[in-house]
Image (tube, rainbow over all chains, first blue to last red; front, side, top):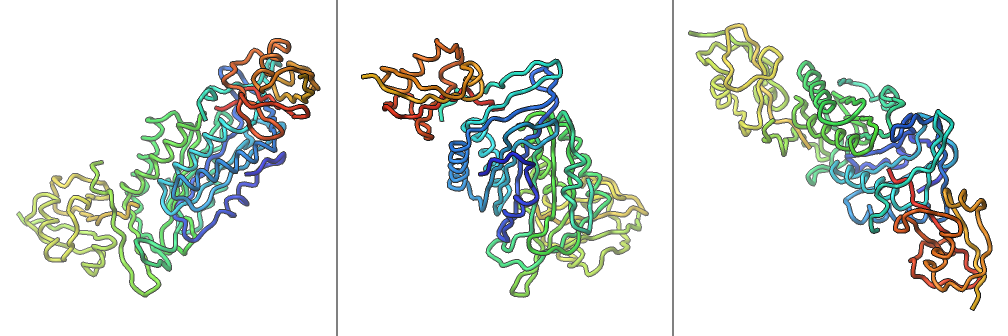
Length: 141
Length: 141
Length: 81
Length: 81
């Protein structure tokens, strides 16, 4: 688990997961899209409280390693100002078989979005801005 | 849908899926692993009947576009001789939201593995070799 | 009526037959009849339900009629996993 | 007994308070008591169940005791989607 203020080097991080026992690699990237909830988005700012984001992110990855038959997993999250098309978060998972890779990858991104102290402020084309609220964060952890 | 006898340029093909409306990118890579069914695998040969593999692959991608709220999808499959660690198949899907991206990516790789006329011959460390049979291919399409 | 059919084999089937295609004179009127005629001769020994057939490069139903001059392609089970 | 607590705010909360932290003298004995004391004052106006608390950089239960000298961090709802 890493938090970075520069572009995520996806090639580097996926190479680091290479493993001759792995037959499956599943990855997810969250990209900054140009719209949300009917608003035209211009850019986005991520605020991250790193001490807990990193600790909790590592915990999620460890949980995935225990819950599923996977060989490796990692997650990188951006902080700071991002533009449309930028990659805000990357998750990569390797496993012998694809079912485990897919399920664990999904688990990690879902948990990361709910449990990490990361807030997203959207800046709209019309000049407004606002903090994006969580839809599922009422879920019990 | 493409079939190629050279290394899959994943960066190029994922870039081609870039889309400012996309907030989610899900991808799957199938790697040649060093074991299968208790045998130590040395290398692998993919035989592809291209006319139908490409037609059927495009059909699967179109089905995914109709079934799920996705913005783009592609699949590239290798043919010929591959070594341990090589990427044999890549699937990439973009969507506004991650649920659609994940489900469609999974749909495409599952269908590709069942419906495309692609056969895998494994060459083992002990000198044996054999065609790998499908576990789920009895499923009705 | 005897038909002249080009039959193409892939992967395991090609290896069992020892060639990738052959010309067959047959009375079979459907793809499945032709398959049944050849599977014993060549010892395909694969669960029929896992095999597929194509006629002239289009996937086809096993019950499809075959015509003189057709290219019938027999696909052994795919690797799946 | 009055405690001296450093309270840290993030994102929406920081903007509502107008600063990222402040020193508070309080009688509150738990994190939730302190939150209730401050939410009205600062107008947090967020569903409590979606907020979280950390004490000295560790996620904590809302019922956790707070001690003089603690750094209590209030997290507004995360963006999720």
